[in-house]
Image (cartoon, rainbow, N blue to C red):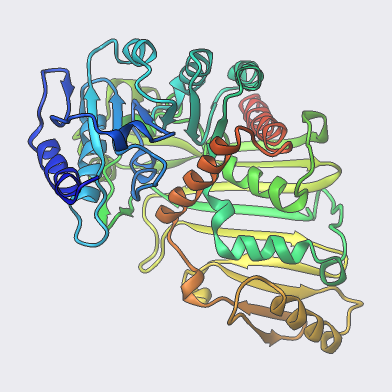
Length: 467
């Protein structure tokens, strides 16, 4: 391509996009097809982007992905906020992107997307009530799917998801969910150390009273995204549309348990035995609701959850279950706003026969995920410290160090250069998805793992709703 054409593509096209060319329901930059465009193996289609995660997939560019992205959505604030976020990425000073959003906002947007097939990968991140249908119809139409969690929020949709995976396999398609927490460096190191049998031993079974694996996530309704206060859609607070916390954020926690404790193993729903599950609400005032949505009053569809003038959002949940005989407790909590200097946080415990691996993210850790290693009672501290330092030195990270915090407890220090934000994890997940697109298949354990994961979350919700 000539230098003149390169300048036209990266400067003129974004400018035309920002001017909003096109008709009433389809907006596009006035573009001329080029030879370069025809060589992209991956073309994204964004469907009904109601969650900010849809935009985070496009926070960076990918060499194998076309800059032209077709967006199909109902007209309204959700798609507008999505396009505003993409525009902000295109116009930022540091490493601006060059996405060209081609938008259709007619009432038949989904049927239009299926009919046109303007790309080969459907990106889904929005109203979760519609996800199962969107996934099923996209796969049946021969389109790959990259879906934000959760893929489903209701037990009744589980058989439909299993069928979608079966159809995807028959058609040679990739159906994959966005599991960003696998890319958090503290979690990755925890996993690596748990795989070191000389150091960790073997994972213990634990008991109902003292689970061997504990995973806790605390989220906040009010937060910053890309440096800007997040405005959430009002439907986000309707568990019939967003999903209860047990079926939503818990997806990440259940995934990490499977990924860390049973790496590379093909799991099955029969490996899960649910013991108990419970749910409870986060209560928001009208003022808090307005601050994060812009709505002066609770919409009609939220009135079922309004008590004494306040909104009860069943975003909190806890499940206790056995996975391959290992007792596990998963808890998700939602607050309105984090303490000053903090954000969403994560706590994790994995108990081994020789040591426990613990991630904490509290005030003492300056709200940064921090990995601790606690030795078992019959392990000698001096010998273990030497073994731990040797194990840490063998990890694929330089400049890691180990501190002896107190008797029987050590801290693994991780340099800031290895810490990336939650937002950046979306690019990492997408790059992994693109690798799978190139090879045409997922690892043999991924699909059984996803099926087992959603069986766990929906089975827990089903149990909690009965009590």
